Each structure stands twice: as structure tokens, then as C-alpha cells.
Length: 410
Length: 127
Image (tube, rainbow over all chains, first blue to last red; front, side):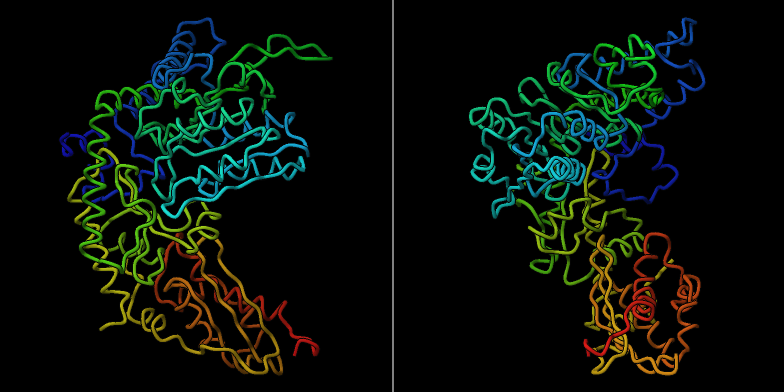
């Protein structure tokens, strides 16, 4: 994989040649072919979908449905099992809202302390509203899901188990296939929801093999546009969802007294969607497939290994990396604290001195930081196909600069 | 733009008016939950003027240095003037515009002080 060639695919690097972008976990950069596909819709077949019988309307509909097909194939789902949303957050909220009718004060929902707020708050609020039990299980000292605690928390009153595939803070890859098999043995009726926001760009996903009931992700973390998300669900599970939104395009018949909804996937896609974004999403998937997951994984593992080793060699115990140090169980992201310097100071100095973009804060995982890691905030550096060894060397230099500026040892 | 100028770093490493007053008339604390900065202040207000102020806190260099700078500025200031201090005044005091990403850090100190004045009066029982 030639990083210089890859960088040429991303126009932002020609506008900002010195940019060192280490925040792909927040959002990936966008290849020019995706930007061009967005523009193609507005300049070539700018029409609403599923309505116009005229040529450009038909073309827009065909392109939109082609994206659904490509994304379905990408995760080994049926086309009708792919629902377009605005992002992972909306996808998960649609499930939480849609399954309210199954949640009573007699039932419980199980999740872990590792979750991003998007896969935590919808379940917490659903339990509060329904007077159901919200069971949050802890992690092992290696920051892995405590499988014994998780399985102990699941009983015959459990209706939903919500799990992330990869932690956006710890980088840990959860062995979900194995965990889901164990959950099915304990309670075959439980609905298993997977937050794949952080895994979708780094691990090939096969929803049949994984055997989850729902899976959510965002296209903007996988080289696609912002504002497009995916909700995958097994057909029989999607049928259980009460539509969060009702309105145009999701109906087969409306009378003044009642409404009959359309078949899947349309009954869960009310209103005019982000048409250009959905259409451009197919180019994002094509881009990943052109590079290939084996190349992506190999590259990210090389960068990760180099980064962990460099950080340890240069800063020793003054820099603390959270999550497993075994890079094979980890995706391309590292959250750390450095000396007693505040993560926001570190991030600001890295930006102003080296044009390095990292994330500082709690990364939308406040319960994890406060109740498990016991740290107010961390710095997160995350990697993608355009990350080079030189970017890591610059990060090391930048952290030395941080130390020089903030240290009292002068 | 370098926001870590010498003056700011000096206040970060050597905060002024640091501590807790023995017999304050007003006190409160506040935090910025998204990044974990926190500031606690105690004040003695007499004749509607800040007679003394001390603060304790933890967090980023900007939040702690800005609080230290503000305590120096408002010492002996009428409370009506303290309450009318704005974001622009704090940026002027810092001597650098910290930008939209860090402005909440820079304002934590003044907001905590203003909250102490308006809502933090200590009743006789608390003393």
C-alpha cells in the first residue's frame, strides 16, 4: 500500500499539505470519488426518488437503490434489510423507540460500561421510561468485556442486549461472534443489537455469521458522506419496529381513519432522505473494496504496532495507553494520558505546533471514563489508510513539544 | 496562533489567589463535565465590593490560568462590574483569542465567580 498514492485520493491533503489527521475514529476523510458522486447527483439527475416517472427521477431512484444493494452485499444482508438513516445514533434510537412495546417494568436491558453514548443513552432512557432494569456490566482488568458478568446479567426477563463491536476509546475488538453464541444459549429470545460504528471500516462484517439481530453504523466513518447511517436488521426483527417517523413514502394506503405502512425497507424510511449522500455511499464502499480489507488491516496493524512501541520507547511510564497493549485485539486507535497534562492542552498544542488533529475529552463515553477508567479525559489518536509512519513520528515530536511547553522543569 | 503564551503559562504554573478563605461571605464551585475542569471559589464581599477572593481547581492550563488572571482583575472591584464582565473582556485579559474550541475553558473561572456572587451567599447557619 503506497500512502503517498492513497493521500492523492483525498483532496484535503492538497489544500492542507501539512495536515496530520489522526482523528479518523471521529470521522474519516472523504475520497474525491465520493465527493464527485455527491456532485453527480446534483448536476446530473437531481430529482426526488421513488416518485418521478421521468428519466432523471428514475435514474436517481436506481442509483439510490444501487447503494442499498452494494451496502447489503458489503455486510452479507438482504437489500430489504438495509434501512437508510442519518447515522448510527439515529439507527440505534430507531431500534430503542421501535421496541418500546416489548419493554415493561418486568423486563431488563443489558449493556456494558464500554459503550459510546449512542449505544447507551437510548437504552438507559427506554428503561427509565418503562421502569425496566438497566443492567450495565463491567470490563476485565484487560479492558475486555467481562463475559461471565455479561452472561450472569442476562436472564429470561432480558429483552435486549446492546454491545459495541469495537470500543471508540479502548480500540478493543470485542469477540462478538463468540459472545453472541453464548447469549443465544442463555436466552435464545433476546434481541442483540450491535454498534458497528467503529468496526465497519476496519473489520469485514458478515451479519449472518455474526448472528446479530440489529447492526448500526455511519457512512462518514467509512469514507462516505456525513448524514447517512445504516440500520441492518433481520427481516423478522425489523418487522417488530414501530416506525419512529411516519409520513411520506412509507405508506401503502392512508385514509382519514388509518394508515397501512409499506413493506420493508420503505416503511422505516419516511420522508425525503439524504439522497445524494446515500448515492455517494456506494463509492465509499467501492473505495474500501478497491483497497481491500486485508491491505487495510495489515496497514493499520503496522501503524498501531509502531505507534505503541514509539510512545512507550519515547515516554515510558509518563504516557499511559488505555486498552489492551496486544495490538492484535485492537483497532487502529490509541487513547492515552501524558504526564499530568490536560488532554485539551495536549490536543491544542499538537494542532498549533504540528497541525496534528487528535481528539481530546471523553469521546462520548462519559460512564467509561468516570466509572471505569477513573480519568476525566484522554487524548485519542486514530489511524486509517492515509496514516503514515511519518505521521506517528510527527506525533512523537509533537508530544515532546507539549512537554517542553507545559513542563515546570525549566 | 500560540495560546500558550508566557503570561498564561506563568499563571498556570503559579496560580495567584490560590486557596480557600477562612470566613467567606460567598462561595460556589462549577465544572465543565465534558473535559473535567473544575473550579471552586470563596469570596469576601463587603460594601458590594470584592474584598478578597481565593480559588482552587484542577483542569487544563487555559481554565486554571484564566481563573487566576480573573481573580487578580476583580480583587477590590465592585460586584456590579464583576457581573458585567463578558467573554470579550476575558479574551482581552488573556491577551489571546483561544478560539471556539477552548472558550468554555477560558470562561469557567469568571462564570464560577459570577455564580458565587449571584447564588452563593453563605447564610449564618453555613458559617
